[in-house]
Amino acid sequence: MKVILFGATGMVGQGVLRECLADPQVTAVLAIVRQSLGSLLHQGFAGQVNKLTEIVHKDFTNFTPIEKELTGYDACFFCLGVSSVGMSEAAYRLVTYDLTLAAAQTLAKCNPGMTFIYVSGESTDSTEKGKVMWARVKGATENALFQLPFKAAYMFRPGYIQTLDGIVTKVKLYRAFYAVIGPLYPLLKRLFPKHVTTTRQVGLAMIRVVRQGYGKKILGNHEINEIGS
Image (cartoon, rainbow, N blue to C red):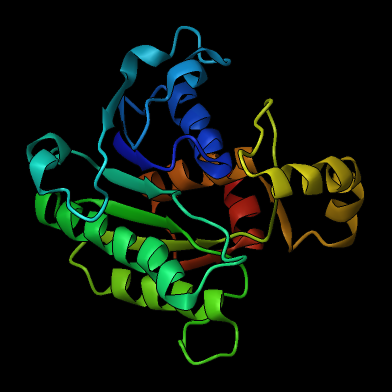
């Protein structure tokens, strides 16, 4: 399996990257990044980075210049995303909808046999008509992705994601949140098993869904944990 990964420097993307590099059936990983992975390549990836290539690409609204380098892949794991806190709907839509579709449309053209997996979020609004801005935009993004001519498309809707393997989020607000909530994860898992997952389970579930397929196109924490355990 050859994989393209977006968001490799983010919290979820780091977890997915680790699982891809650890899986012997994933033979190549292409990380599309705005800034080089740099020191991340040396954080627990020893002996595995030989199958990782990165393309530093500044303009995520236009992937035409690198189209030739995006062909021949079996899957795309799209883990790129931002918090909607403090953002207008127009700004959030640009990052969430426009950039995702720019990448997906190019990949669908270059790899019609590809499986595309998009990391959305719990409570995403498929109707696109609800009161919660981020949920509407995520819903619109999911709906648009389902219309593209991929072999298959799956939407992952995780809730709380516990970081493992030394992964640390880059967002200061989230780091503070995890410093408080992280130690409570065993309790959260016991009390709310359908609403929590881990970076490791998300990565494993993505790989297995590509390899085996799945009967549902939208997967919440319950399905992610079931597949990724």
